[in-house]
Length: 245
Length: 311
Image 1 (cartoon, rainbow over the protein chains, first blue to last red):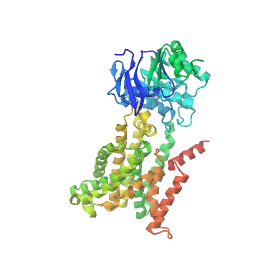
Image 2 (image 1 turned 90 degrees about the vertical axis):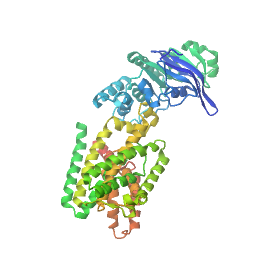
Image 3 (image 1 turned 180 degrees about the vertical axis):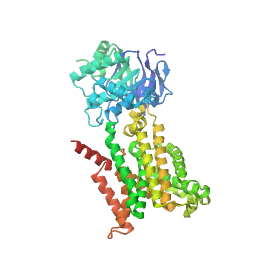
Image 4 (image 1 turned 135 degrees about the horizontal axis):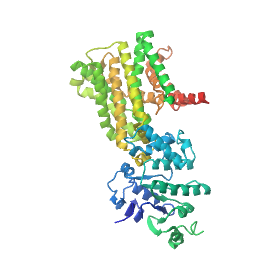
């Protein structure tokens, strides 16, 4: 039995002949920031989709706070306190930025007055630096801004666990450094537990306290960022690419 | 509140204009204007389903049939007050809409269109099967008929009430959930929105609106409910009206309703194209033209004009 706030326990999932998750076990301790890395197609986003119940595991389990999510419907996951962002953005393009964030509060706002919901949504937006876009439709804003809209939408549900799928996608060096600060601050201020998928090693090495490496659906390494970076299997998986450099 | 002022002002202006119309129009034109009101109700409802929630239906004529027969049967067999029969049509169609919305949960896009098409084709055949109760091909007639002005008042009162109801439903949490479902089902689910709940709810509401419109349509045809009134063309007209109005907005519905309610009558008055085929050609050409020039319907046009006025 895993001990972390969130855990995959011997998770297996195959699509036809492809094994997307092959006996993956990982733990995310409460209050920590954990990185899930690996080459393209390693199963990182699949792991996110399994945790959020968009995919059903063939065997193994997802555990949150000690409870199995096997019988939890996808739309209930956020109510339990797990919110996520998406790698290639899943926004509501014809809703305004504010409305997108308000939808994030859907599960927690049933009994709240609309004005109170709006106030809180605007606060969250200010917190991630997108308040000035509140009234604009989500379509047509730059990619980096939209990533933050998704972040604000996830935060609006007041989650305990935040799953970030490539939060640094499309950002330049300076923006990545800002993102490092933002992720740390959000974790501290909102007492979050964060699991993030990322290709950007600079971000992973700076922000993560623990790193879990997947390759072809299998765990090939796990540990502190510096150790993982030196791990021969990891260097091999990345073909001596960024990590070795 | 200040943001709402222009909207409220224009609504009041339209309401004022509409209440003056019966005093200046001929009886025939009042009945035409009543017809626009009937389409207004049905298109408003369909827009909640198709425009706001993204679920296409080419079968809402079926719900109009159910609403229409509710009014005719209740009035003939039980002499129920006509307004009460409209409320019954609303309730019955709401429940049937929820139920018929269930199979639709598994369908989307073209498949949903075809399933609702089947609804539009099959429901008007039911009176032929149960002809004792529903009058077969000859239809059922209400126990009393109403004047043009009564019908006009009823149609536009229903329009006003249901417009406010739609606005109240759509402005807050529920309306946002509808539009979230339309824009991204995956993100909606991840945000805790129960797709089955909101999709069937939208189906139920739009069916209820169609039911009221069907009641009114029966009253507009001397109280006769008969299968031929509720054919597939009616369902298509509703969808065309919703597209001309502008999907996902409440501000073009008057134009959409006028388009489908008036165009056939107006174009049949033109001598060269006065035949019924000519009328269909004009209707078709007008639809193509509107969709080319106003891809977002009249609501899109209003939005563009407002932006121009502000700039």
